[in-house]
Length: 514
Image (cartoon, rainbow, N blue to C red):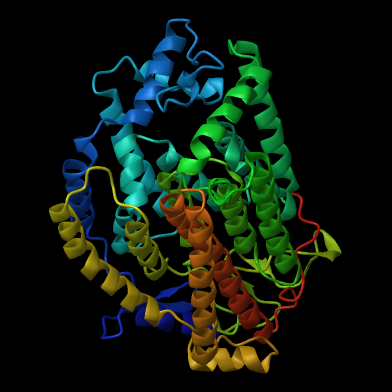
């Protein structure tokens, strides 16, 4: 009876208006998102659409539409192997089956605009799947320059972003998660590290479904494609050699400072594997799966020899996942043996056996807009949309400025309190005190600027100083995301340890169902 009375009181507190504007989510008090006003989001989309998107041709989707039309008429969609057309920027160089959905779309008038409009819906849907309920988060996913460039070009990245959010949201459903991962990797081969996410997280059924689906897709493509596997791999190699130095990839960065292409690609892949290894080792020490998911997406960006600015939208998926606060059991007012969130008990699962611990319970609050706001601002310093004028940049500043300030202020209210930090320290965790954070940030900035100066000087000797700035900024951003993921999961691990969660100090072995 006492628990029911507490629940009723909690519901009353959550529904009562007050100056602190708080609600109760699964027994935990969170700051309430400021409503669902669709007008600001729709207004921002209209400004982006008419001010920036429609001003240039949607070159990427035009490539897919031409390939779809060729497939529909039984023609070869690929350029002539060994010619400059392969890396002209207007050639179809994707796995054969990716042209299939564009075959019927190519019959429609204004097919490119229809695809871009669908991409906007995919952005909103993916943001919702990632757990966002605050309208500012939706606006901040639309606002980054990398998002706008992807919409201008008509790329697949909005769909890939939605796919990443869906794979994470359905990660406990092996068939759905594995199928989505198979489609993602087939559509963009550089997303192959997602397979390692499933494997290292011991979601073995989802991993096997993904492998089987990917094998079926490649087999069907091999049977239907007019280009053999060896020829297609040769086209990809020629494309990477031509485009890597001009993009934002780690491979291109190394090439521009004098490293040979083969060595640069190998170093980039080793760095990606190192990121995954560090994330996996951290999960063995009690960090949760969000770190592995973020590490897999970061590894995909690091290992890819071709990275354009619109690829960076994919980093927003793990960013949103990490931006949802997860309180400790003590915050929820429960202890070991209680059920929280999904209803999983703390400790060994009696249905499986005493040697197989279940996944730690989760109690996820609304996604904070602060981290996405920081990403949006950083993207505009890295690159600006195509054909953007000074007046348009000033308009973006006038719109984005108040939105970012409001979001960063909202992010401050969701930080761990001093009491929670002391609780972590008392449990033997490493409390992220403001002084410690300031010291870490200061040292990090000194290293970033020092290495950046060295990279620019090395590139200047190869007449490529201007090319490495964006690539180095991308590298810093990817590493920052992984480091922040480690910080967030370490903080939550400390809170779970303080609450007496027996799973906080160990990994999650024995998982096979997703």
